[in-house]
Image (cartoon, rainbow, N blue to C red; front, top):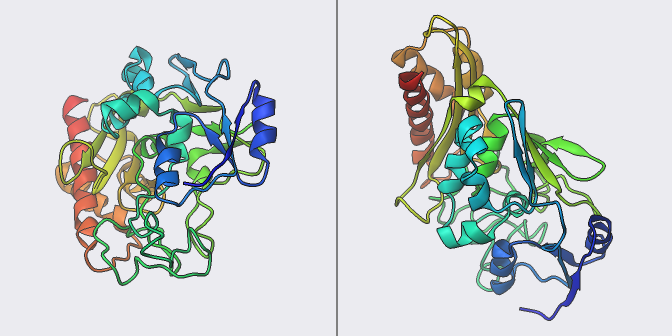
Amino acid sequence: MRDFSYVRADSIEAARKAAALPGAMLLAGGTTLVDLAKCGVAQPETVVDITHLKGLDTISVDATHATLGALAKMSHVADHAGIKSHFPAVSEALWQAASAQLRNMATVGGNLMQRTRCPYFRDPSNFSACNKREPGSGCSAIGGVTRGHAVLGTSRACIAMYPGDLATALVAFDATVHLGQRVLKVDDFFLQPGDTPEREHDIRAGEMITAIEIPGSAAARRSTYLKVRDRQSYEFAAASAAVGLELETDGRTIRDLRVALGGVATKPWRARAVEEALKGKVLDEDAVRKASGLAMEGAVDHGANHYKIELAPRVVARAILKLGETA
């Protein structure tokens, strides 16, 4: 870990100015920054401490929307009565993320900024070729051990999977992220690798996340987050689905459906083809399972991660049918 300068920002504007300096990185919960610095990926020249900024840790929820301050702790958001009532998938996604100790430290803004868990990305001493770290150097994962890698949104430059849970739920319900002068949909905030895998987020110099806003909806109120993983705790998703369901007054016909995938793509992945295939249709198990297969349109495997192409539709179908039973 290299030596760095430390700055404690006393205002949002001061934090933005400091963050615009070359080599500067923001410090909130620190759970990601410390990891990346220890393994030699992050080498900040200046660490800008924003933990003392007032007003950025508030959580506001009503029937129309939720606003989460960027410094709100993951555990506080997960346990908030309004979030559990109006956005259960968001609460469930947070409870299934990381460990209790990390959830108590990590912030929701920092969670959106987390980097991939690709072992080749996080081991620069043994794998020098990584287009995320060094653009143009190659991708050590392609042709390597790929069981945990992405099958959607990949490119010839990168197949690293996005590991987060919260963002998957946010994408499902059209949440937005506030960056100061700009407000983006969370879906647009995350970038596919293409030929520039070093750019994972649409965030510019001098910008920082100040808040996340989630629109309320009937589908958000009847929602769930289903995460399948190799073990039941402290593990990233092999495949996950954030799903919200609204039925017509007959209790059988799908009025609105929201589906987003985690654990299978280079970013949180909205499965719009599944949504469109089922809207207006009667909630039927055969129809749900058939439509769920559309979640893998365009999927490309790299050997050991082929199982995700079969697993993800099953996770989607299971989540939809679970909500149908409680509707």
